[in-house]
Length: 469
Image (tube, rainbow, N blue to C red; front, side, top):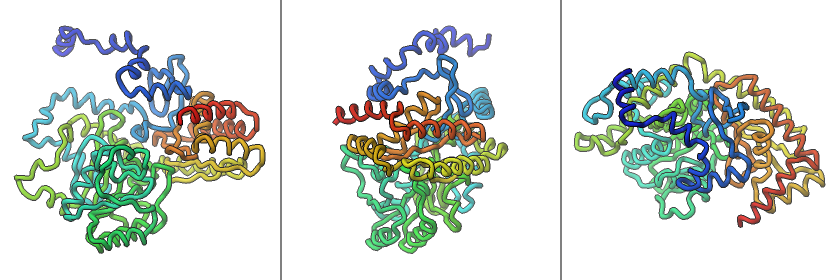
């Protein structure tokens, strides 16, 4: 028995035993001690599954049934769950007994991960490591304000950049902002509106413009040429372009960064997180130009002016290095581009077949499926019933049978939106595309049948929506 095993035995802590004894209480524990609305919501829509293990793009429940994951933990599981290379890297770093987080030394792993990340953004020079996407955005907001000595940051309507106070100030969704005022004095514009951007810049107080190259809410891509033109306007007014690649980065859209789809775009600051973690250890990173970092850290007195207690920890850095190695060795970005095109084309071919399927859009493995008002009288009446109760219920009606009947996990792309967003692990292939398209086709057949089971569930959603007002 090793010294570690002897110490564990003396402590009396046995994780496996604890889970075996109390895992069945999972929903009750959440109800009593955590966000009580989460189990309530899951019970209501029938998502209260008991998942017992996961691998790659699949979960297995307590009955041994497999589920296809088309959500990837909101994009965190870019390599799927429990990738063996990432697992081994974490075992190795734990076994190395490194002198981690001394705060007064320079360990090699953060420098090595920064070096690898910057090869994918050669116009940038330095990296700050935090613990999440919202921290990466907070860092960019602070750095932009300090480097330019200007107070205001512009953002896009319907954007999502995080939920801490600074990133919430550039969140374009009122539902998240409501009740948390006062926020920072930042200003929204519409994605693609260069005239609005120029008007705001003319006021002379704009530090930067933070933008998702493809918005997560609704899966809306910046119009062709917008990012390049915005960059030129910003630099003319001595303001910074901040690319939020927390969800779109690390291969999600078929290129390493989504801004790379447009020639000549070189953001001053780039925020990444989610998939960099390998699904194990939270990590966020803000990549930026040398002069910005040197403004912020301008003297030894300011060496800790912006820091994170767990930033650059060895486990997160090891996970990040392993993720980047796997992406290169297994050609993950190319797979996301190729599989994404296949999935999008297969789904787009259904638009003319179904009245309520209006659009399929996106890049790589970030795909939005939008539903809309049908033309036939019978379906139009049912659609109107749902819309009167709450916009977004039809998309929810599709998401639920995908899970309950076909064992595929997806999500509605945002509150009050008739859009399903697909952001599966970047490792999926033709088998998963076939499974999803077949299941989606079956659900849409049922929805257009007029008296299908999907509409029985729709009436339940309507009652719940009306009761919740």
